[in-house]
Length: 393
Image (cartoon, rainbow, N blue to C red; front, side, top):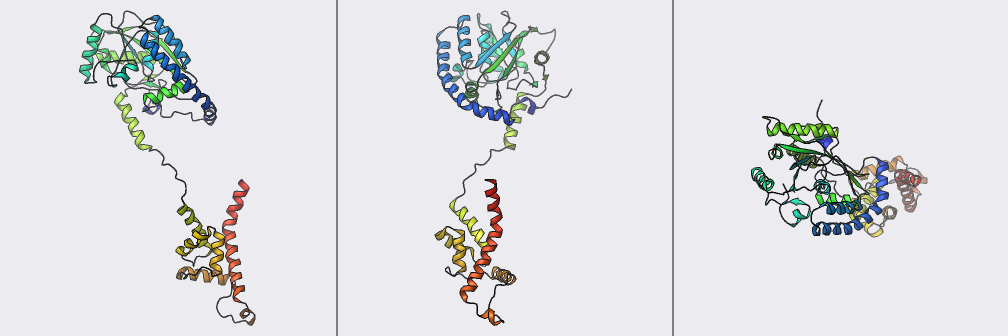
């Protein structure tokens, strides 16, 4: 069977594609913002309770009840094995380790988060500054050798996926710490919104978690798995990956965390952010108006049209001023020939006429005839557009 691609495994869009769901999300937005503000206040109390009360069953129960008010609903099947020191799980959201710590005492090492208050506040186990993989393994082995240390919760995928299509390749370092591990499966769902988007910071994901009506986590504790005789770390990791994939109903793939990171970077380069649309400026509007006058009177220079438009601000007034001679100008040669040909075709007299009755036309009458001709051309060009706009309105 062909393995799924990274595009199917990584969420790239926050909002639903169907129009109906987008409308429902828009209607829900005012309530979502109110919930976010309220839950932000309650979340501060959850953080204080987790800091004051020591880790025990009562503390986990209280925090689980309070997080349900935050919209994080957790259900589980099976139970953690108290004899094991390593839990391995698929990775879906940035809150996975917090949710699993509500069900069982466990610690998640900070692989990429630098040590400090933020690392501690997010619930990670601080092991010093992030260094090489060898230093990380030595720190974790030292942690496990201490008596009474809680089990470690590890994410061998090292990056998040949607958990609906496939699992990333499991890194072998997580399986070099112990010969027995307990697999844990995570299924996460959320109405109208994606549970996590690739490349989105953790604080953005926290906002959408508090904004959403609810986020449902279903945790399933699978039977423990032990290393077979002469089985390498890589083979052990592959076997656990296939067990988790089978339990989730997805495929175990060869895509690594580095492949996912490269795919996200490539997609960002291929789809640059849209340029903001700037409103038309006064010069742009004047240019459009000058073009309309130029189409009616092509022999008039653009500079003359713009100068008169700056005073009138009206296409019709500028056309009238130009025809009646109120604005002096020197006709452009090519445009003047075209205008002469159009006026001849429209039977507008030019120069000395042969017929006596034509010679009796006064200059004012000739101006009026030219004005009506220009007016008619203007209405023919732009009257249809105006009528279409009025009909649509």
